[in-house]
Length: 245
Image (cartoon, rainbow, N blue to C red; front, top):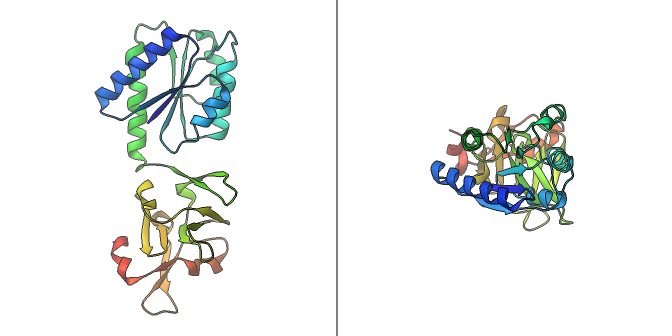
């Protein structure tokens, strides 16, 4: 879990760091703490495939709207990442509530119960993550090096690319993404990704039917793609049949 802290006062940076370490010890979780000085730095840290918790001060360098602008940018680009507001400006609560940022918590710096509120927010995050069965998205790169954030629930199946070594084809409902990578250890990102052949992983939540293949030893898994012709690429081989039981 990475904590991205957007706070300009050294005193409060130290307080936040101490609180994070205290909660991490209490909950027995591994954490990394980074400090960002600009919106661009915050967004860059949010690209990580780790669980990201943004702790954002609404006022930064005397700009009363800097934190809200930064939080909106995070929410627009990284829907699944977490945001906690840590601020002296309790009067900004209404604006935050009407900005569609959806922070997990709004922590007032002067609140005597600050520590308890902070720990409660982190406990909620841990509980949410545990209920997700590890991650909810995977970061890939395309052939141009651009980052692609793929939501696991939207994946139907993944195969090795027939024409490029160390490339994969990710089958979504109405699209196929060609990305860099290998199947090895890819199913570690979610319990829902199951290996069904040496060259294929399937999202078990997308399985709708299993039918005969031209090869009598194999089966075709139907996941209800928009282009039904592509279903033939999701092949279950005998060696991996037990993975679906």
